[in-house]
Length: 389
Image (cartoon, rainbow, N blue to C red; front, side, top):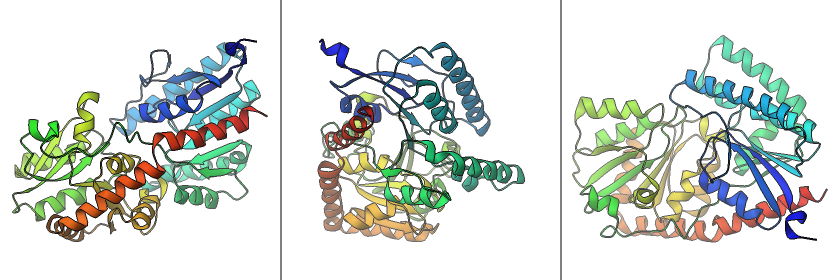
């Protein structure tokens, strides 16, 4: 019997998926299954091209979700004759929570759903109007009735998993299984060797880095306020890299104040990313108080692989706070106090020994607990368990 005949077949459905995370899935299934993937992300040469996700505005996001929903309805009708042994679905878009169960009914196979963001809690944290409350109430009822129909649910961290369990009246099968990070690709790069620093004349600066999406749940405002308080220290520079709903806040701040200590860059191409993500002395992960409980920012793992000390911002509890406090990889700011954030940045700027210790701990934890090789083995075990049913 040929190897190809023995291979299982897995369907992955995610309107957007990080290349880093797709690589984990692909490597976990290497030699045991072929993958069909429905996505708009160019994670490999052969994909079933889905409608693009436009995160520019709330309206554009909603339209993107509707287009994806219609696309999947047509795909389901056209592909009912396909055979799959397992289906893996993500929360991007959130309507996938419904689509996943329709696929389970269509193909009669186990379905695993992974929560990158938790809905409708994300909506509840962003909107307080009557319409949003009504939608979220209905959504919670649907979740209560349907979560237990999934064979397994995944959360990025234990706090996320706990929150999902608490939000459901009945039982739900859920475990925490974080993103992996390629610690061979992302690693510490010295200031004099970091091309992003050199090309932008930053090799002698103390960089406070924010890299990634500047979304509604990210507390960009507190970072700008801290930058304003530290503007007289010439060596400290705040670097923002990325796009998102709150990027205009940084643009307007720069336009209004023309600060020497705040610089804004677009998302970096792959060949530059390894240098830009590792350019910080301190790397900031900023969430609002509610969002810190319902989203686990995977960018923290990238910072850690690069040996950067973290400063987390968020609420009283959450996966980010637990990560920082448990492994002593940085400082945490609870709430929205820019003065405390500025104070912690200044402390690490002055205490090079503490800064170095946090960075070393971060790198060690990334290598020994979150490396892509470790995480892919956990996914492989999970996939094999459900494909053998």
